[in-house]
Structure formats: C-alpha cells, structure tokens
Image (cartoon, rainbow, N blue to C red; front, side, top):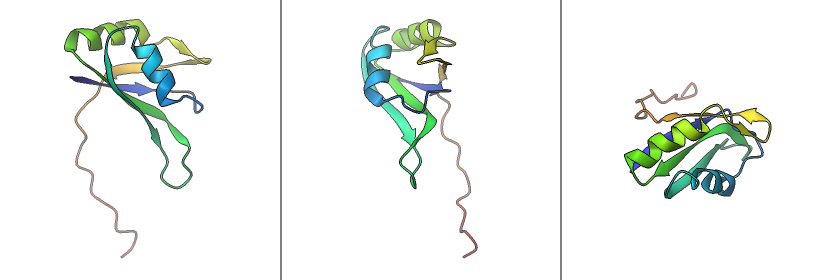
Length: 91
C-alpha cells in the first residue's frame, strides 16, 4: 500500500469525492480529509492510500495539478509523520 498526500483541496471536498476521483487510477484502500478538531471543518488536505506503488505513481501523474471544484490540487507521496513536540498550552 502506498499513501499519498493530497493538498490544496476545496474545503467542501468529501472523502467519497476523493475515493471516486482516485479510483480512476486504481484501487483506493482509504481516503481521509483532515478536519479541524474544534470546528469539524476541512483543513484543505487529506490522504489517499492506493493499493500498489504503480497505482500511486499513476495517481500522482494523473491528478497532481489537476482541477477539483476550481482548485488545483497537489498530489505527492506522503512523507512519514514527523515527531512534533506536543504543546502543553502553558501547563
């Protein structure tokens, strides 16, 4: 499985829309739109897991810079999440 980062998403984009779009390139294992914990609104990016490296590469070449509801989306290989120091918010 290969995870892709999808950025510059329209704020109204749904996980189903991502799944439908990326299924044109192959088998989509999962599609997630990252939402703000407080408001529940989209943060404008998400992740799509494709079932193989080949399908992931095809998705990047097909969709990077393509138009989704008037926004040119960014599609690239997801980098491992970096360990970020957790904020204690003054505690």
